[in-house]
Length: 500
Image 1 (cartoon, rainbow, N blue to C red):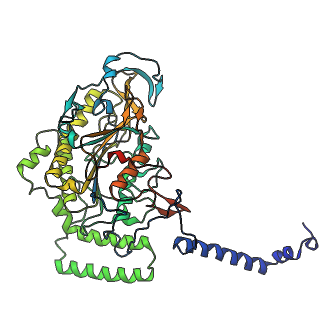
Image 2: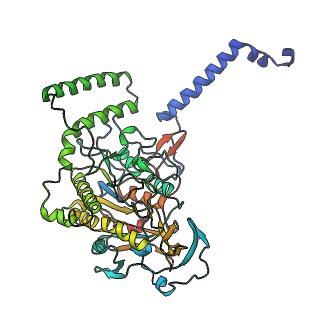
Image 3: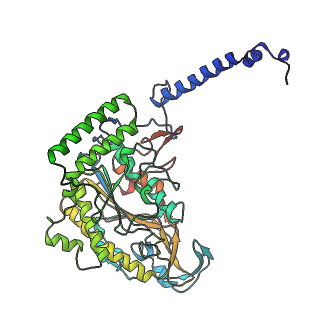
């Protein structure tokens, strides 16, 4: 043991328990004070993002977290509908026409990898469906999607999309949250955190899950991550509306109202003791919203008032049972947008047991059958939804996003009937407020194997979507674990060429 007499006077003081605890206590207090001042933005040096810019904090009233807020800049888009297709739609069999695949069909030219995500590769394969020019723009679209093909003059295609992963859970996370890992806020949560909603009777963010179940990443696709709990998506669909909406017959309307009023007073009293607890305020706001949903949700989910011609256009009857359920979900999406819901995310496909083309678009075998099955469910209702929104004027203030997590390979797998995952090239499209019509941005190479011109990363994609909603992706941040977190991490550039 060191001889105390060999230490300096300051060192000997540290060996004294009282002096040590006093010094440690003051130091810890100083660190805590600095952290609190930084969190409240009261330090002399303002917080900065990784790009050196000042964050824009939404002015959120803890008692009214859903109140409408202004965007960073004024833009046409006030709402957004995301149509998400889990499983990875084959771009070379839908919207990305590649004549070279016909020319090299059955061959294996140099440069094709021997092994991809699920194993050995096979030969180049032409599209399983014929491509034809569509609309006045002459856009080449395959016969797999005849209804959406009729609307290409309203669409803005991004053909050089790329992602950082070839696995479905990570791919879904990346597309919907900006990170391959779990625990980060979804796109819809970021938008509602920034903008709130115009409708106080319905959730600001609704996720309409496929009638077959959740996608591979489940509720992470519409979760709030580290944002306040108030901004997570509320999930229900036409087949499965929220539970416990109806008042029990044994409870009178008067007693029900008195109970609600009592709870409101108790919650307000409790919140007054913890005025800075955003999670508590979020929970109370969620419970109060749930009470209002008892009357608003049955109304919005009641499709009995839709005309026979509308039901027919959406394909509610006459196709498979799954198409009928998805068609009702599409009708529900339109009705929610009409009611002013800020973000609606509509899923086409689920993944309760791996999918493999049966419950989603993951066609590793028999793509001719499995992609056709998914297209029968998705094509007509989705096209009707977009056409209906256009006819009602909803596209003037709504951005519509059609997206999947990655594409599929231009060559077959060794089984000779399916296409493997392709993270290096895939297609998404946008329509509605703020984007060019009848426009294609970016190109994949002659095979549809890799992005070649105007490559668009998922970071760029999300930066562009936020920009179209009037939000600066570099300044919309949330301070978490010592970092100014954002949807696009430290990356992303707006694809200005697609803006109307």
